[in-house]
Amino acid sequence: MELTLSTVNVSKADFRWSTDLQFTHNKEAILELFNGKVDDIGNARFIGQPLSAYFDYKKIGIWQSNELDQATKYQRKVGEIKVEDINNDGKIDASDRTVLGSQVPDWSAGITNRFEYKGFDLSFFVFARVGSMFQSGFHSTFNTLAGRYNNLDINYWSLTNPSNDFPRPNQNQESPVYASTMTYFSGSFVKIRNINLGYNIPTKKITGLRVYTSIQQPFIFSEYRSKYKGIDNETDGTVNQDQTPSVRQITFGINAKF
Image (cartoon, rainbow, N blue to C red):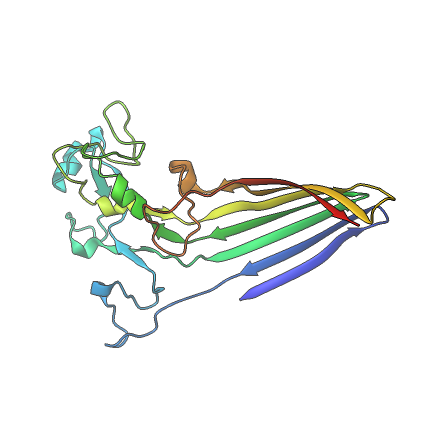
């Protein structure tokens, strides 16, 4: 479903304000597979879920010092990743994996506002995508917490920093148990895509003279970037270690018509 709405909010002799609004909602689901309406767990294909569904254990925090007895019950140690016991049978096994989310957002929307006042003009475009998830290959590669390689600067657990974000470092293991659960992030974000400001200088010698400045992606708001300020979470697939961060670009210019 796609909706577009264009409005002229104010129109006067020396001031004009117009708005363009776009809204998109897409629902994607597998209806049937080769063996009927039966999930294909081995290939992560699930009836009623999008093709890009993520199927894994659900990380619900880090085992804290006051949870030693419960952690021991699940054969884990304090400071390690805590995953949800989906079927509540007192153990964690393959049956506790669940669909965590998918790359398909619940909705996307964009709004452009344009203002004109005498010789000045200002416009900005805001874009939002809500409800998607992605898996960061960057975190898979650079977040082993074993001390053998460079590691991301993360909020890991320690006795003096009882974080629920990432487990304690451990030089005795290649990567944490349930390490894949640390790679899923919210794909929701709000971006100020661009801001444009210009002024038409009154002149009689030439047809037109305009000075302007343009800022691309000046602001990005997302849960992912607040946890790790680096890679842009606007992606249609797995983020790998080669992807570059979002770039902010500022341009100044002059347009002259003779």
